[in-house]
Amino acid sequence: MWYKDLPEWLLGFAFYYPLFMSYLWMAGALYYYFSREQGDALYTSPPALSEYPHVSVLVPCFNEGHNAYETIGALLKLNYPHYDIIAINDGSSDNTAAIIEDIASQHPNVKAVQLASNQGKAMALTVGAMLSTSEYLVCIDGDAVLDPNCITWMMRHFVSSSRVAAVTGNPRIRNRSTMLGKLQVGEFSSVIGLIKRAQRVYGRVFTVSGVVAAFRKSALHKVGYWSTNMVTEDIDISWKMQTHYYDVRYEPNALCWILMPETLKGLWKQRLRWAQGDAEVLLKFRGIFTDIKKRRMWPVYTELVVSILWAYVMCAIFLLWAIGNFIDLPPYLYIKTVIPEWNGVLLAMTCLLQFALSLFIDSRYEKKIRRYYYWMIWYPMLFWMISAATSVVGLPAALLKDRNKRATWTSPDRGIHQNRTMP
Image 1 (cartoon, rainbow, N blue to C red):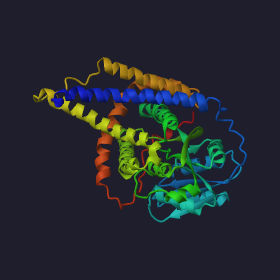
Image 2: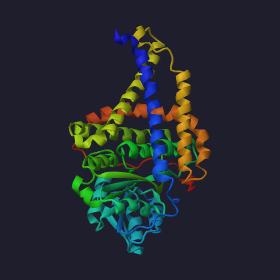
Image 3: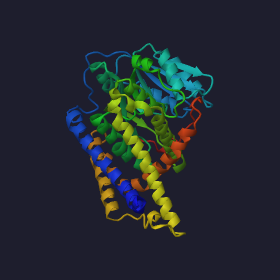
Image 4: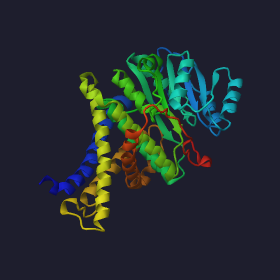
């Protein structure tokens, strides 16, 4: 019977899926790097554009009193000739409202918008977009620091093609004094940056980075702006754009320095929100296979389905192994060991190869980033387990969610304040 080989099937899928995807991502990223990226000047020397359209930078803020001066202060130093800044305070309970009013009173190109209560990031962005008179919007988080040349690099895509509706930037980790911070430096390079490069080659981008992305306002208007009931508005808007046949691009030269969680509790909450957002998109766009015109989204959708399935398989393997240590299970349910053997060694070596490749590519943007390579040995042990667990929890959370409830936000873990660095 087929179920007699169940342990081998589970272990085989758990091993071969990440192995296959790793080499697929590396191949796609290498092609992207040599065909589209290597020939660019360094990010410090942005290209000359045929025109410089006016841009509005939207900064939704919720309890950003510690960060607002730094974030908006960096925006005031951008190397772009025509732009304004719209800071939206989304009902903060700290001194964010007073800070953005103070900045706006001193700088005529800064507008402060005050929302009476917490409406969620999607609503704050939509309000900012409605108040803007620009066709192009750059949206960043209230704790992010934008590179001075970021807008120019993003705008080259909009100027060159009317099909481009969104451009996602290249987030870089600022807080890297702890092990979690150092691991996320490699993660954003190897997992997020590498995958975006590969996805641009074989299909569509899964998501723009919510912390730094640019949009064409007319395209936003056509798709209905950001959805207020989705827990991850960035994933949702990316799929809305691309299922309406717009192009979403990745710009690695558009750097943005960000803060990430440095505690396990903060990391768990962040990744659980991401996993629930993945599942919500999976449910919302499940009808794309009935439309041949949306075929370029099929690989991205399939990858998401299989990745969630992999998470459940991983949890099943560990659960069966743990139970088998206490009670006698039937042979077709017994997992002998979860300690890596030859296949685990091959997977670990592939993982390290992926990190080495990604850090080599990203050394264009951070010359000393390769020194974080030696921390990456710990990444599979910690982050793969968190990813699997949050995916398992995130799917039922998405299924049971009230679709009519607005997704508001809470202040996330931004790391240790005194250990922020700008490499």
